[in-house]
Amino acid sequence: MKRPASPLTMFLLLIIAAALAFWAIVEGRRQRSETAEVLASQAAVLARALAPGLAAASSAAREIDEEAAARVLVSARILATLEPVGEISHSQAQVIAEQNDMDSIVYIEPNGRPVLLAGEPVPGPVLEQVADVVIGEADELVLGSDREDGVEHVAAVVRTAAGGAVVVRAHLPAVLSYTESVGVDNLLRRLAGSGGLLYLEYSESPGDVLLGATWDGGPVPEPLDNGDRLRIVRQRDVFEIGVPVSTPAGLQAELRVGLDGAPLAQASASAVRRTTLVGLVLVVFSLALVSIAMLTRSRTMEREQASRRMADLENARRQSERLAAAGALTAGLAHEVRSPLNAIGLSAQRIGRNASDSRECGRLAVKIRSEIGRLETVLRDFLVLASPVGVAREITDLRRLVDGVLELLAAEAEEAGISLACAGPGAVARVDPESIRRAVINLVRNAIQASGPGGEVRIDIAAHNGESMISVRDRGRGLDDSLGDRVFDAFVTTSADGTGLGLALVKRVAEEHGGQVTLANLDDGGAVAELRLPACAAVESS
Image (cartoon, rainbow, N blue to C red; front, side, top):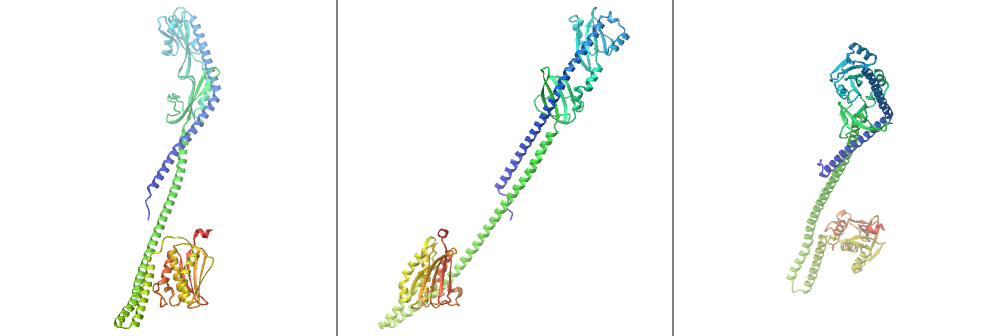
C-alpha cells in the first residue's frame, strides 16, 4: 500500500529546492561578474593600445585647427587692406575665394549689416561673434571651428580701416581628407562594430568629445550618470566602461568603450542552465534517496507488522494450546481426584458397617490416609504446573543446584536402594533457580522410580555449543515406545503411583527458559533425560 509523503520529507524537499534556487542565483551572479571583469580587462587593454594614437590624433587635430585658423586670418587681413572692401564685385570676390580655398567672404558694414560677397552664407551663430570687432573693441578675431554637413570650417574676422569688418570662412579639404583616411578617427570607425566592440568615444574633458565612432554610424550615446555599466543602446545590450587615459600633454583623458553585452547574457544563461541541470540531477538523486528511505521504512514497517501478526498468531496458538491443556488438565484432575474420593467414600461406608471390627477400621483408615496423600500430591503437582514460571532470572551454578537436589532426594533413593552420582565439568545459565530445581527434582525422581533396587542414577552437567545441559541417566526398564511424544502430556504415566504431571512440568519450565527437554532409551538399557538451557552469554564469551 502506498503511503503519503511525510511532512518531514516534504520539508526536506522544500529545503533542497530553496538551496538549489539560491545556488542558481549565486552562480549566475558569479558567472556574470567574472564575464564583466573579462570585458573590463579587454576594454583596459584596448585603451592602453589606443592611448598613444588618440593623444597624437588630438594633438594633430589641434595643430590642424591652429594652421587653418592662421591661414584664414591671413586671408581676412589681406581682404581688409583692400579699399573699399564693400565695392568689390561679386565676381571678383568669387575668384578670390576659389583661388584661396575660401567657402565664404562676408563684409560687415559699420552699421552691422552683413553683405555676402562670395560663397555660401555664413551661419548665424558665426556672425553673432563679430560684434566686438565691428564696434572697435578688437581688431581681429579667430571665430574657431564649426562643423557643417560633416565638414570642419574655420572663420576669422578683421576690422577694416574705414569701419566695418571682413569675415572669411574656409576649410582645408586636402588636410581633412588625409586625416580622415589614415588618422585615428578612421581607425575608431573601423574598430567599432568588430570583435564585440560597439562604440568608442575619446574626450579630454567632460563634454569635450574629440573622437568617436559607433558600429552603425549613429551618434555615440551619452554617458550614464548612475554609474551603471549595463545599458541598452538602439535595442542592443551594451556593457559600457570608461577607461582613464594619460596624454603626453599631462591631460587626464577618457576613452569610453561600449562592448557587446551578449556574452554577459550568455554567461548568465549558461550558468543558469548548468546550475539547473546539476540541480535536477541532485533533485532526482534526493528523490531517489527519499524513495529508497521511504521504501525501506515501508518494508520495515511491513516486516514489523508481519512479525506482530506472527507473534499474535503464535500467542493465539499458545493460548489455544493452553486452553486445550487446561481442559485436559481439568479432565485429568477430575479423574485423578474422583478415584481417591471413591476409595475414601467406600472405606468410610465399610467403617460405618464394621465399626466394631477395630482391625478392619484401622486398615481402612490407613487406606484413607494413603488416598488423601495421593490427592495432596496430585493437587500440589497441578498447582505447580498451573503456576507461572518465575521471571526473576539470575546466573545460576547448575552443579550447585543439582547437588542440592541430590541431598534432598538422598533418603528417598536410599530407601529404594538406588545410588545417586553427579559428574561433568559443570555449567552456568541465566534461569529462575526455583523452577529449574523443581524440574530437576522431577527428572531425578522419575529415574529413581524407573530403576530397580541396586540401580544407579547418574546426573551429568556440561556446556556445549552454546547450551547448558543436565542429563539424568538410569538403568531401569526404559520408556514405553507406544507413548511417543505423549510422554510429556499431563496425566500420562506408566507408574502406578505417578500423577503424570512431572514431565509436563519439566517441559513447560524448559520452554519458558528458551530450552527443551528430551527423553530417549539407551542402547544398553535404561533411559536418559536431557534438559537443555541457553548458556549464560557472559560466561560463554569468557
